[in-house]
Image (tube, rainbow, N blue to C red; front, top):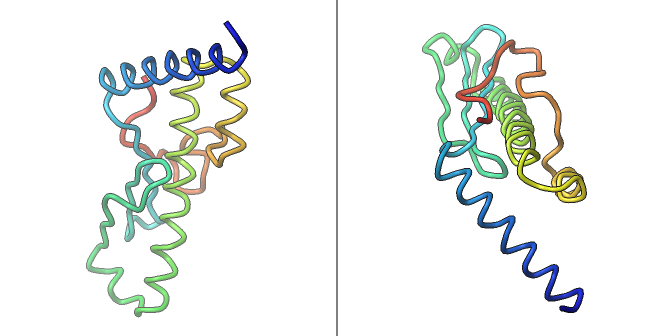
Length: 125
């Protein structure tokens, strides 16, 4: 078997493992909230926000400030989602593949290691 065929088999094997893992555990989401809880964002790794919750009090911030807060919190939720995905998939793949996750923008950081406290819907299983 040549190198290309071996690589294709390995990609198919990892793909099947990841699909099975997601089927068992469900999707990975990241979550972040502003320090006062006025804005909360939930997102999947590499995706736009699934949910944005804004408290009535946040509406007093003004459009520009509220928009900036939503973007800031969404960035933290995306970071949390990427870290959770990396940790979840790193259990299934070899170290080189885990490093590749980092290279394509899903670093292994600790989920919830932001200034908002615990920020997750569920951890990797």
